[in-house]
Length: 80
Image (cartoon, rainbow, N blue to C red; front, side, top):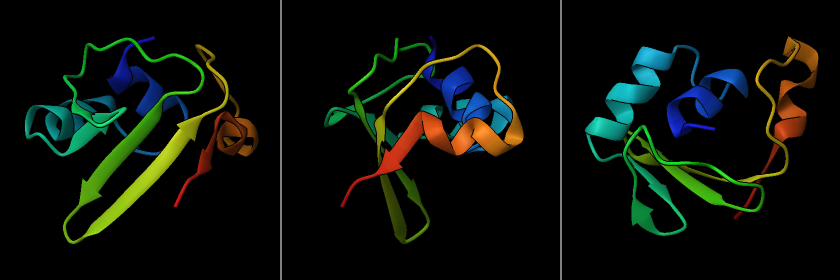
């Protein structure tokens, strides 16, 4: 699954266009490498997103094309 779509489906970022812009601006890394929106995400990947001065680091636990709002948080876990 594409990175921008994963960020939207898992509700880490609310809109796919915003996720795409974050990737284009270089604020998203996957497994320590700067990532474009089109990079393929797999279970076990570590995604790091910089929002201003805050950094969010998550591990991918599941991949699904659609997800209910209540179950979206089960797709990832926070890593520190």
